[in-house]
Length: 457
Image 1: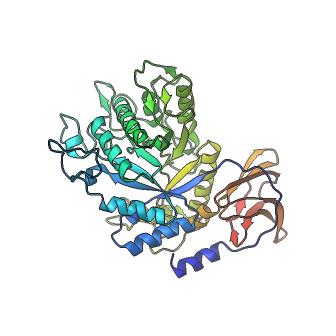
Image 2: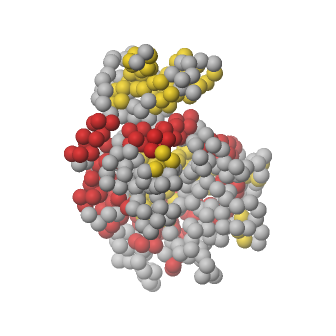
Image 3: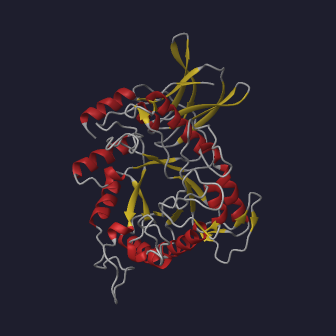
């Protein structure tokens, strides 16, 4: 981290601390980033700086892309073994460096495998199909999964594909008037799971994060995520009746990308779309599938959010104001935790350059492109939310930036007074129910860190 950034963060997170009584720790929430532009930058100093910035704001994980199409540069010839990481057709250098640099920065990699090379796509690929998407061969995917996991036994988390309910990543979505992508993805997922677990059964297999919105009916380029997950888990309709399923899906964690149009509490318009408040549309079928043997691989599957964000203004003139961006970020984290999510990876750490335009790029980073922390950096590092439960009862929720007691304070007559003290370790969630009136302003302090101020609603 640069000296200027240290100074900026120190200014953002200034304060003091008090002692606190012991209490049971709430459920964890791991945070991370998705930012391949940082991970695969050719300049080692740039990679080191930005990975350090991620760690400085409390991230403990980072998603790293293993782009199968880019790594497998040629088709295997007779006698070649693409399940062998030493196969000469593989170009591992950039991926190896990204994994090593992430770990050196103290970030645990979540490896995303996606994008089939042309030789591993299915027969009859139309020219209109996006590259790498057309009916990827599950056996070839399994061979690559085995190769990459053998090459990187230190990696624990493996994600099988990206947004398979969109044809840009998996096509066709529909065939003969029926969804086609969920069943094909189930075959891919099961092959991937078997290959990863054969190398190390302790490794964690994560489904592809589904995109939040889809098309109605039995045609189109997008399958609504709730429908996709029901089909994946062999459940019929919204009553979730179990269907015939000779080879149920095997995985450890179900992932989703609940981007929202509006605030974190704004529900998706369509019944099978899934924004932040709609995660129950995926969790409920997951639990039903577990009960009926349609979700295998773990006795109780985790739920992760492997992409989410909003663009901010600045830099994007059409983004939400920076203060709103920060508040929505911390409220989203709370809503995910409340829904049972235990890992969230934010898209992005650093704003992208608006090339060729703001409309085609993302300014969702918690840092501006020049490295200046936005208010969202402070919200990410030390989120604090007050959620009204009933009457005057308000749940105070946050995630500690370091080890030591967290003091919750309220603003009264122009000064801050302490109302609760809670123990916490670095990255640990803290929560307490208090009686607070609407309009009360609160904040949390830990050592030299102070959260943003939250006004109780």
